[in-house]
Amino acid sequence: MIFISTIVGPLQVNCYILACEKTREGIVIDPGDDTDTILQLIEDHNIKVVEIIATHGHFDHIGRVASLKEKTGAPFAIHKADVFMVEALTDIVAPLDLQTDPPPKIDRFIDEGDTIVFGHKTLNILHVPGHAPGNIALTWPGHAIIGDTVFAGSIGRTDLAGADLQTLMDSIHTKILTLPDDTVLHPGHGPDTTIDREKRINPFLI
Image (cartoon, rainbow, N blue to C red):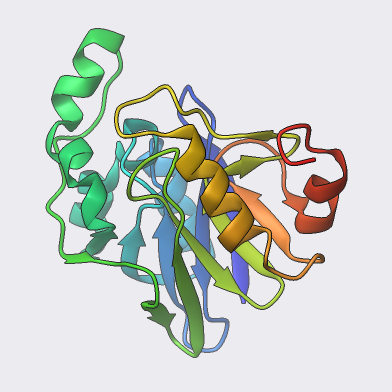
């Protein structure tokens, strides 16, 4: 699998580009900002984007979905629990003196048990609410893109609209930490980590 990560926007979101090395079909996950950078990476690797995915609906993860949709023609998918954030995107960022696209059109909803398919590759979806009600994780053997649930040595914020600490902890313990210990976690911000490392050193999980 082609796996590319790039840090976008003032809140330094990890945007991921995944593609099938045989067909060059791929997906973009969390295009929060810096559309030109994302498009250049897509062009450099000769990727045909077949879907845009958001791990959750916070503005720093969906801020440039609309422009990326326009440039690639790819549909946009998100969990239905975060629709209220997508619809209010412009209002949410207005007081923050930040720029985003207008709210993007949602083309389909994704939930636990669904799959994301591009070329010969398939990702499985887990619903892991808590940081955001619609937070999802996308998993494949040995890896998981987990949004803002777990970070290297920390966990996601729970002081935002729709967030809940107990729900987040339940998601982490019943979904994410049940993955194999050698699973590489690709979070929404910061460096990669592993299940084993977070079980051993994360003060929120020990």
